[in-house]
Structure formats: C-alpha cells, structure tokens
Length: 340
Image (tube, rainbow, N blue to C red; front, top):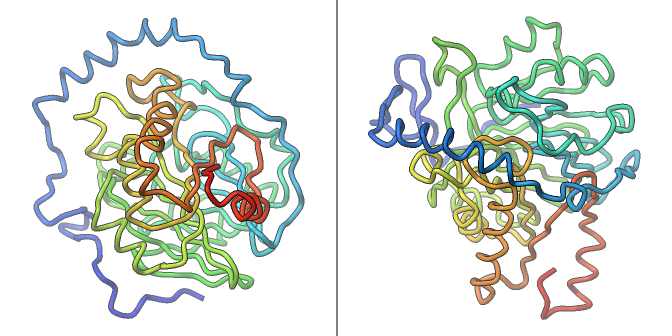
C-alpha cells in the first residue's frame, strides 16, 4: 500500500512537465568549465590506463544466504547493493555488465547471477543507464519477477516491457510490503535516457525500515545539507547509510550532480546514521579519478574527523563481501573506543 507523508517538508519543483532541484534551475546549462573538463577527461585517459590497481584486493568470493531478518548488505559494484533484511531480498540499481561500450566495467559484478537469492524487491533511484539497466532488469524480471519500486514517471517504461509489478513514487511517499516500509526520499540529481526526455522523470534515494532496523540508500546525488539533514530528521533512527563517494574529479563538473568523498562524509553526518557504506566508485571510469581516489579520500576524511564520528563506523566493503549489521554491532559494543 502506497502512502504520502502528511505535510512533507518539501517536494521537487515541477515546471513544464519537468522536475527540478530548485526553482530557477535551468534544463540545459552550458557552463564555462564544461569544455575544459571534457578535455581533462581525455587527457587523463592514458594516465588512467597505466593505473593498474590490484583489483583482487577488492573482491571477495560471494557466499550468500537465502534470507535474513537482520540486515546483511553486500556490495555488487557501482550502486548495486543486495540488502537482505526483514526476510526480504532487495536489490538497488542493478547492473550486471557495462552501461555502454564507452564505459567498460573495471570491477566485475559481485556474484554470478545464478548465485543470487530470490530477489523480492528492486529499488531504482533514477533512469540513467548505469542505474536502470534494461538487460539486467529484464533478467531479474524473467528469473525472479520482483516488485519494482521506481521514481515518478518511470512506471510506463517497465509496463511496456511486461513488468506489471511496479509502483512509482514522489519524494516522501512510502510503500509497505511484507512487513517492511520503503520510503522514497530526495536526492540532488537529474534524469535522462534519450534526447528529448531531460528531467521528465524523478530521481531520489530510498529508506528501508523494518520494526527493528533502517537502511538509507542515497542513490546518485550531489551534496545538499537541506536534503540530507531533512532525511535525518524525518528518519531519526537511521542505522546504515549507503553513500556514493565518486566520481570526485573534475570537481567543478561533478559536484553539480555527484558528491565527492568528502561531501559524502558530511552528508553522512547530516543524516546522523551510525554506519557508512561507500558505493558508486571503482566500477566505471565516469570521471578522471584513479581507481583508488574516492576510497583514499573518504578514508582520509574519516581520519581527519574522528572527533565528530563516534560511535559511527566506516565499512569498507569489498565486492561480494557481506556486511552483517548484527555482528558489527557486537564488535562495536566490545570495542567502544574504536571505529571499525
């Protein structure tokens, strides 16, 4: 059952059948730094090709479970998370391969598709190709027939492809399913899949709640103190915040629609969660970052802001590695003075 939060704090701006983050936002800004940023991307291509990180250090063989009442979170690459809680298997922004020939996968998917448990719910943050991948969604529909929860304006895309179990949402709307509540919350971003559909559909993040636990998936977003602090106020018991930390550079281009690692740390403080799980890094070369740039920066930010962080914890998950919230709670209780 879908519900609208009574008296929501703010909603996306609607103008001429499009969505906007703020009232005077322009659909087609052409900033003076765009051309230099594109040149920077191509100039850095050769340097990034020489960057040969040890990818095996960030991959752990997937050893999943069928279901879990207490949260188990597994990073599958980019913004794809397998979230198992409330005896539901939930997948966010699933993408198994590459969004296009221009952006080849650096890190593989965190499990073999046949190893995945039965997927009950798929959450979509927005319709960009690296977050709403047609081939992956068709595969999940064929193999699992999950419930798809999507931003407003995207339902017809699914139903045209035969996916009838789909609900679409505006910010602050929620949906109750088998004892869990899924709430669609603001993000600072944009949408587009074709030439003429810029901002025709909405974007956002998701808060998943059971009676005992709560997890925030931030989606793809730039930094906004208003957005993140309001999410923290509306959901005061957030335990896990799954935050994008890249691409970081070129900063002037990226910060209009993506958080860098330091901004992600501040957003984590704003929403007042307890555990930080990074995502949206290392899988595709969307910026000019070297492989380790986002993870190095969030680690440095974390070390520089220790006095602000206890008892919160940074969870540097490898691909396929399970983060058991219950186990982590026990570790933190045993070692109250350490961030893990």
